[in-house]
Each structure stands twice: as C-alpha cells, then as structure tokens.
Length: 323
Image 1 (cartoon, rainbow, N blue to C red):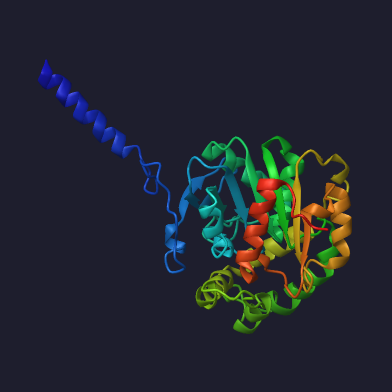
Image 2 (image 1 turned 120 degrees about the vertical axis):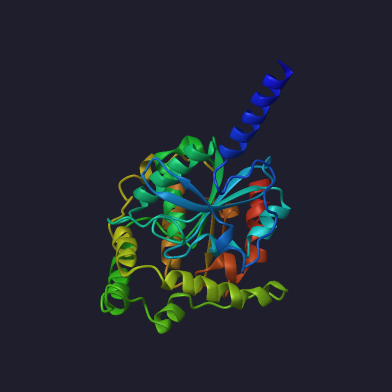
C-alpha cells in the first residue's frame, strides 16, 4: 500500500511541474532589477481573451500595491525601465505590458484604437487575476489609461497621466504628416530610416546621476525595437489613434478616481494649450498637476528620478504640494 501511495505521490509531483508554462515561476519571487541587456528576454507572455498573446514584465513586491505602467506610441515596456527601480524600492507590484502591435506582443491586422488597447488591458487584468490597480500611462499609454478609466472605473485605484491631452482629434494633422513623410514611402518589407527614428525619439537625459550611463544604451535599444515594427503595424498604430475620440464621453468620467497629470513645458506633441482642458475634464486640481521646465515629451526617461519620486509622493499623500 505504501508503495502505491509513493507512486501516486511521484505522479502528482510530476504533474505539478508540467502544469507550469515555460515562463511561469512556481515561486512568488519577482525580479527586483533587470538590466537593459536583459530586458527583452525577461518578458513573460499571457494569451488574452481578446485573442492576442501579450508580452509583459512583472517586477517588485508580489504583495505590494499593484501598479501598471503603460508605454507610448511604438514603444514597449522598456520605456519605463529607467523609472522602475524607484517603484521597486517603494514596494510596488509592477506590471509593464507591451501594447498590442508593440514590443513582443502580437500585431494582428486592423487599426488599434484606444478602446482596443483598453479592452486588451481589461483582459490582462482578468488573465492575471488583478482586482484593482494604479494605472500610469505615458503619451499613447495615457490615452489608453483614460479610456480604460472611462470603461472600467471600478478597476482603477488611481491614475497617473504623463505627456497627455484629451483623446480627441487634436493630433490628426501631425499624425498624417508623420505617416505620409516617413512611413507610407517605405516598402512593405522595409522599416523607417535611422534619421526618422532619431527625430521620433529626440530627447536628452536631464538629471545628474549614474542613470545617465545607461541612458544611451536604453535609447538605442528603444529605437531599434521600435524601428523593426512592420510597416503595416506602424499604420495600424497611427491610424488607430487618428480614429480614437473620447470627446463625447468625458462627462461620464468617474471623478472619484484621483488623477495626477505630469507634463513637460517643451513638449511639442502633447501641447501646453490642452492641459487646462484635460484638467477640467478629469477634475484635476493644482496639487495634482506639474509642468516640468525644460523637459520634453518623454518625462519618465528624461527625468526618471524626479518624475518617479513625484509620482510616488502623490500616490502616498494625494498631493504634490504645489503652491
């Protein structure tokens, strides 16, 4: 009888190992740091109910508050990699998904609107068993967060928007110009030029600390990962944003959700003139808004130390103490 029980015990142990997927860890431990060289290969994968396989990074304290960091247009989770150490140190459970079509996530055909991204994000919540989270989004990621908050307010603890504007038709002309000048002329199996990628990611590191050593390596990786996206994917991303418009829905925004808005005063993509409008739509007061002087569009990697600490301060206190 003991031999039979031992046999079944061995069988059960074997099945428990087999039940783990290739990227699954049977331990609750998560990485506390990931280098730029390791970032792409550190990604996990999950198949969503929306039909795509989504790539993501998971880091930090598995028992800490959930925070989801969303990247911008044609970026991927690496976009937040210089900021992540500050959230790890603060004890957060950090998720960094690659949006549909970007990074290592699937890129099916069809325009990707902010509703598409928000629906994928809801499916990610379901797949990972996340009941509620803080959501922080940069640029296109901020548009995704706005849309998600409108569609699924019960899942939003707080939201943080970096380099954001209302999701309306404000960028249509500039996006058409980018597509017509740099994407449409290339062949189906070609990729945007290095000249365009340097324009697309024009920014400089603006803090005096050791992270600057990693900044050039980081930016080169980000450019190369964006550049290799297929021409059709660039079209789906750009035209999907042109097709996105939440103008008729802001009156339905749940104003009980606290919102932080961070902006760079030299940002030519999400312009200063639209910040007051967004603050009105989302009921953001002066203690939850900051306009960084001499900072451009890419706040979280131009000033990762300052911006991350501002976010963490606001999450802890509900205010940036602006006067």
